[in-house]
Image (cartoon, rainbow, N blue to C red; front, side, top):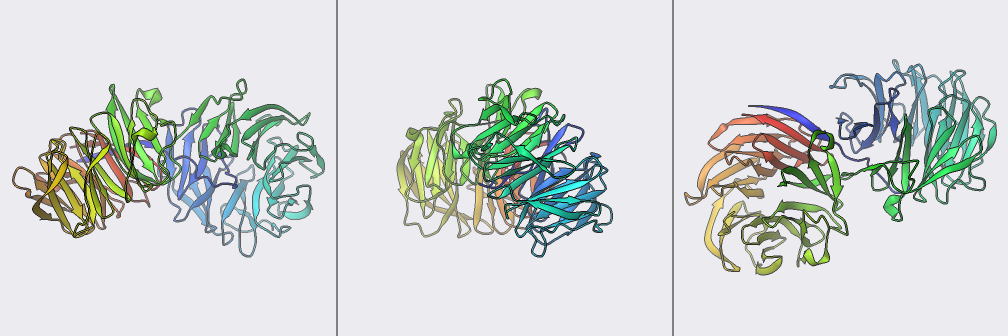
Length: 610
């Protein structure tokens, strides 16, 4: 039994309203970098479906930047740790780790020889540090600010200069090495969000929450003027990025636009209108080779089109929040992965021909407003989802749009849904089990003497099994539009967390909090077929292979196991499937292809060989 990681579908950047997002660019021009949770994501800029994820920070990572040599990446986290790691090997071996100050790191800059690093942020005793990359010893001080430093940059030509921008509304200018404070600038009337030197070092600019972008001489720090006259943007400016030839730059703003500036004339050449919704605020940007990228508050990555400023060349969608549920469905020969997140967003990932594999999309209209706990596709090609917004939705996977008429409001919060033939849906809610037929509630069990946690309806539609916090599986027969208690229950090893019938209806598998998976044989009066031991912590999710002989389980121990029904000892173990995060969803595309999702907001595709 062997496995291989076939594809990583990365998360989007993690975004926060009013907070700039720093994008890292690859000096070789191939990749770009951003962070989400404890992960640093490296994406191919020409084909963003190609991605790599670095997950060695124990805390949330805030910024990552390539060394100008291209061989190393420095990433900083909320605890003030900087990790410097190798980019050339798949293992990303750690070269050095430092703690320049205690508190969130907000930006990082390297000198052009890749030998010195500056980092700034929310330290308790100081807001910045500059040190040698291989020893960590200091090569200067970054005083001059009374509040958090948001941004730092170092001139990429000699003589070196260093600039910073802070929440104290000031920019500061340093000469070195060793870097010494020269003077501060007080041109901005609000927070300074971003400071950047031009690649040729002749100029630098500062961008602020006051909507202003100021230009300065790169060597002397003398002010040269402002972009766009009175104001560059109607809203705060969160990021700027220079063109490779230093003649132009782009700026990203809370006014939901990105602007392209001619630095010589200080005039805007193009305004990219990104939308009208608050989620269309622009919080980050990157100019790399011919690519102009911006990041929306939604986390979407926009590839801007100079010749058509109101319509990006492409928009990279996906998840920016942790994924909680997952299912797979084949439609016209193509497999689609549906995943639901913490914020109610549902993503559609298509696995198609090579060039288009990994395209992300979403349903149009207004969907769930809270965590999507479970999802499954029914025989009418509807994605059936339940959410903490107290609804169950039936959304056509062909029409791809939410509609108010396909929404069922529940009395209490649903936590689990399953479907069967004949338009039946079983919704397990807090203290209630509800049977739906053709999107209508037809029967409800409440006054139960146990708390229902999960449910499964037999593919033939004859039986509903409900797993309880009492550690039992309770069986009900489906008679017409009612559920009849058969007075029969089976024992799991602990409170039930998930359950599912095999596709052929021969087996029922049940996971529990006591780290065990139990499989019952349906035709043999639900006698125990096998108990499956291996997880070191609560098992949270399971999925049957289409071959009906194997199933996968995922637990809080961050393990995924693939089990063989007939032989509990024949198992495949995938440790660290999503490093530092437990697996929240499992689904099979075919008997040799497993999909996993996790709270790291990424989706992974595995090839299994039995």
